[in-house]
Image (cartoon, rainbow over the protein chains, first blue to last red):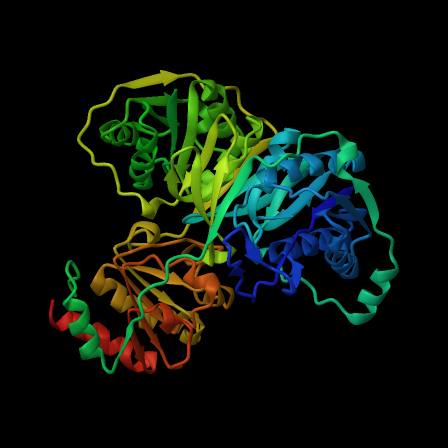
Length: 250
Length: 312
């Protein structure tokens, strides 16, 4: 059984991005990039399923320019067997990426697709659901545990107020929450070996899909800043300050 | 054309965020239908009482007792051609369902819109709330979730017509198995007026409970936690406040022993008043706090609990 994982290249989670002075986009020139953290959970889970003998191959796929080679190499260094880059010079949005990903899933005949539940740049959290819909596959989002049993995946999902467990017939799409696992640390020799592995390239335009952006970015703003607060010296002072606010009864 | 709201409920009651979705939907000045999938009489009565709704559409079927994304998406899509706008308040429920709907309609979805403007234009927050994108959709059907706390709740008191429809056949490739609820006598985190959040400085699950619970009890507050506190096992995952957890905007927010990572402040910076208690005067949480107290939380939280008690 093949597992496909998608890997997005995003600004490192420790970096606070800045808006370009003309407000046209965020300024990420020269900023440290890396694998979307939730995608690392997805890769890790795929590798563990392979190590348990439940899967035969783990394939990592990414979308965009050859700059994505670094995140695919990271996936290979973690232990993925193969990597595919779907190259596109165009700016890709969720729906377009999902269509490309669907084409790769069908080409590879992958039985399980594990994605991160959201990317930390767009914060949209749509990809898994869109992909599952396009393929008419079952979906399990925000997974905190995954068990494979024959042709069935039993997934516990983190939802508002608790958890939900559902059973999915394979093939299926699952999106990873952070608590699914603790991604392994990549050792330097593995990273060196990953550099030698080939990365297959597919040209997005050859797949003949409508991947045009549907959302036009009009402007990028810094959010309004909160007014600076004050330091208080004691609990008494804090409580009296709070009580001075309308509607707060302590 | 009309606007359709996917109404969330937990099988017992309607989510209060539906009222915020109704206010958001009024932007389009078109008739608003409220879709209730499954649910009981109490849920339907509340839905029918929301002012500004044209019709409540009730779809009932055995397989909707435990709603799966696949079934709810198929239901919404079966109605979609009558609607220009399909929306819901942002939650783990709508985040699960509406992207699936958008894909079946071949349109882009707008997640967690902060504002709605003319010409299918929306503000969204990206990069853990550090950046706001203004985006315009070119699609003919708008599918979106809205950031509930940015919209006032529509009032109750109406008596709207309820119509019953059949649901499409069940999607059999996914089956509901079980669910767990983190039972709590406290108010729901996402709608509480006061939220008290603890960070890793609490040091253990026992201390988390021992220090924060009495204060929460006295203030009738909901408890929240940082991701670090949840990962360390001090608090259950469903009370995580932040980019990957719940986003809250209460009247009063206490950040106790919270350092203030952007992933956390994303989830609470829209609170009306923020109080931070932390031993480290340089903790970033003080940059978003209205009132900061540099102190040992184990000293001052019990004092604070006593203080609010003594004046009750």
